[in-house]
Length: 477
Image (cartoon, rainbow, N blue to C red; front, side, top):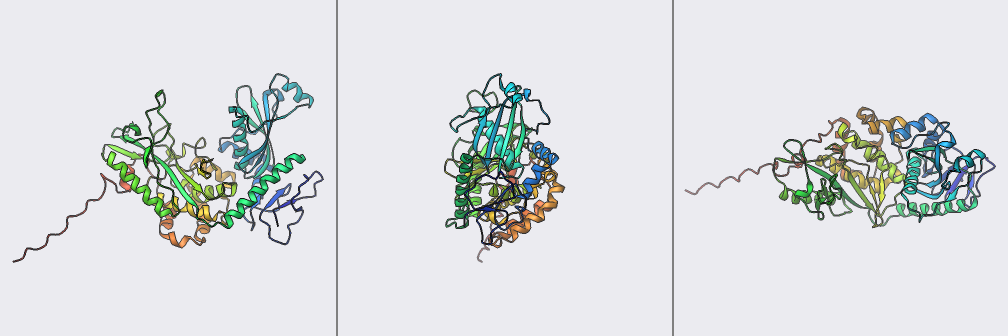
């Protein structure tokens, strides 16, 4: 049986060709889309739920919505704004992480007059239109939907003369003309196929990473990574160049690029080998390697993870947020969380040319082997079992605020909830040692220090422990 649309008794229900009704069928369905009803919580249902009760509650309560938009750095909800304020409006229909229809008002001074008369004409913007404004509107729309905990919604945005955006309306069950119903059902069919592929996966998830670091001299000043490392290779420079550098040759951020691997232990080993290559270039005590979120003000760095052979959908991103980003945030100092929400916001992701995707929420987790191993192993387990990981503590506005503000005490109260689910996974026993060490550190450890040379924790030269000389054999008499 295909997916099911669970709805109320509303008369203006879109003409879905999918099975639908006011009660769930007796047989198992691959997913449920709630339409105008909040009967199911996504964190409690036995099947994937689109538009779960958690997200619908955030939209129904204006204060909850305002809090979530604010902490995520998203445009505020406009309150009783005059229609004359807007030079343009957008209406965007979103399914999970992608808009499937974009409309906007035409340019020109007649917009306000048309709005007042109720004769506003919205024109569809095709995917080929790639202006900066349209890209911004599309990104804001899916981010608003994701941050609120929704999967399907219509977002209406307003753009003011000063370039400021505002959220005018979010509707989880909007009226849909037949052409948009067909578009949505096409997305739902692709989504169902992706879920089936992830359930019946025959190949292990392929995991990659490109964690970043920076160099600091003895006075605490930035040293360019490009002084020591090439652009390419297993250890090189990020493409971000120094401000004001017209040559684009002065690159401040270093980057490790281990080979993608199916086994997280192989990824950790190659990461360490690349660090050893870097040590051959920089083994001086007066040049420290530093990591975290923002070891130098104005230079946010990350611990990006790359996933292949698994679908990029809101369920997986929320699992990564709740089961990985949340525990790691329990160890972040204030300097690290300063990169958010502009960088490292919840659900921060980017598609990759190779067909996979990059998860960009995490700071650079190179600060210690315990943290690096925990992050890489957790990422692997979450990607392979995300359909079984349904807890959503970060759906609550106060939990999101704690994440963005770095309230470790509040986040640590949520940690046992996600740890229990990870411990129930069939793959947990294989990695129990490093995972328990990571979770224990997240629950009770001190935040990392972004001024500390990470080579000490990794026991790399010049801080590698000296091997004692072998005992001499006694001379024969």
